[in-house]
Image (cartoon, rainbow, N blue to C red):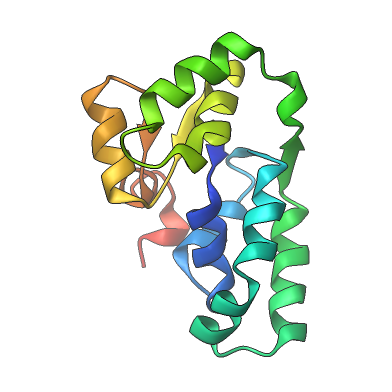
Length: 145
């Protein structure tokens, strides 16, 4: 299955050494994509990630390096303006910063994985291809323990 992950999925994966988000991101059952904007978000929230994780910087960087091996990054430049506009219209009432992730999932014609409940419910209401952790957990036996 091909999926686009947004920032909150990667943030959650960085918060501890073992968690469901990291198992999903490093599982070969999925083709994982994200946009380069994810790097901006990680850098912007680096202090918050360090505080919440209670891990030292080296541990966080090691986890980030592991996760990044499994994520296929795509430049926002590949996304046509019409897809950005459609994505913005879907996101503007919830969080416009999610626009690049939604636009990338439109371009790649795949589902968006998010743990943002407000975004998930909003996109579901608009019949957008969105999934959450619970949707994926049932597909992977490794996560059912």
